[in-house]
Image (cartoon, rainbow, N blue to C red):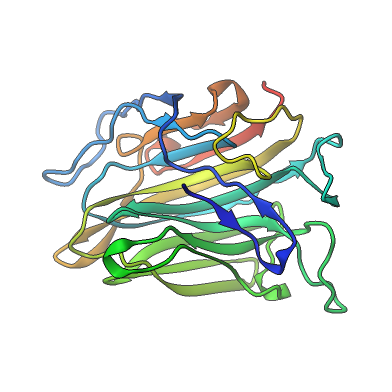
Length: 292
């Protein structure tokens, strides 16, 4: 089971994952002229959705990949006023997130930004969520005896990002068993080396990027009806890192390299991109919990 727990003991939310339930993938539509490495494994036509959240995911093939990165504009959430969290009335049962990660050596990771509580100017943890903050999550890994782990960046102003700000984000292998997460933009930067025993330069794995409306305590269940919408998300570019002779080479995450997933159904998403944008892993994404 893939899940995340938020710090401060203030809330628990469910994040979209890669386990297989319903199939709502969109077959990739490669544009002629895309480049590939010799022997590169192409992505599968479709993957099955994991229930519990509204999410748009691009996921690579399982191959000699060493990470993923991209430049994006952070989206804005308009929450369904009827979806109040009864345990925390200042918060909602829906929550936006934008993240990366992958699966290698049987270990799943979700690493990126989620809408979170902050500490205000007086050092008090807010009752409501007010900014995107970095998080890192891994599942357990038997080969390295690692336990499942979730952590947030410290609740400090230098690690808060806001809708409309542009950031560059990456997750990549920097040593066997170590992923480096970097997010920077709008004059702020967070970087963390994260022990993940399944990720090695000699292994094969898949990497992903995800835009989501997560739902509190809903993992593995059908999505809950909501009018929450998350709009204005823009990927200006995204790229994979290829492991070549033990080194990482950046290469475009073009539409010949990913399986396109819109879960639980494509009817909740507006995704637009020109052919040129698709060739560099760019697109605009709006998520409408009430459907289009």
